[in-house]
Length: 392
Image (cartoon, rainbow, N blue to C red; front, side, top):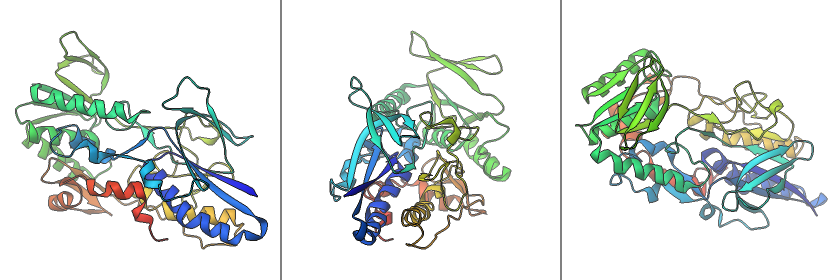
């Protein structure tokens, strides 16, 4: 019996949602229709870590161990896939090291067995959901999730005794982190480097100004047009941060929150854009650079980086895969309709924040209701088990 290998690389929001949808709906539909030619399908999920991390809540997790337990932020990925037969599903814990597009194989370096040679995984269909990484382990998992937990706990331990904190990054991560720390530790001297001419550059200037006003009311100093170039710890436990204006700041705690880079270093250069995102041939089907390859989430060329570019893309992507594997005989096209209007919610402390939804500026109360009150921690178990995709 012929086996068609579907491989999903990446097990964060995009990879988990796609894997569950394919296992629940796409693969059963294909096998039901392929009885005559005896083709069976197997999905392999490749994850660099054993645990899913709800990184959306990192600004609150790092501020205190008492607000949201880390046990709610990190959940085992394997637990979400217990209901699937081993003949249909396999989880491999390892990092994609290289890809041979001619042989259609991926070399995987296993996370907890670095001494062994890379494992080779073959694919017929490949979904790239590799996401993006930050310089700091606070915002993404660099291999083992224990490193991120350690970084969060280290920050939690440092804050009660800190007198000065420097945060680099004027996007949501930096702004939210400044708000969380200021609300819990009002006596700390906090400086936020935006690196641009204003905060939250994806939102209109009026909302950026409102965010800055909220932070200033919490005694956060906001500095525009200055970036951190490097940081080194001294023997006394303080951190020296060299800035691009030639100055040096010495602080008790430095938090780097300056953006992300796509996890695509293992892919052929011909598959990538100039900025190393996976080429998507159009933003409706999510087909990738070559036939049989697809991309979704933060590593994909179509993505604007928001949550809706993942949530709204899973069903359209899987409908494309169903059509391609059935040679157009099954399913209906469900084009991905990208949200391009201004949409971003940014908590500034636990009681509210600023933001916009589908082009409409929203009041602080709405930011609290949707995100600020608990950083949506209640959705985490559902992400791991694929609750959002219980129905096709």
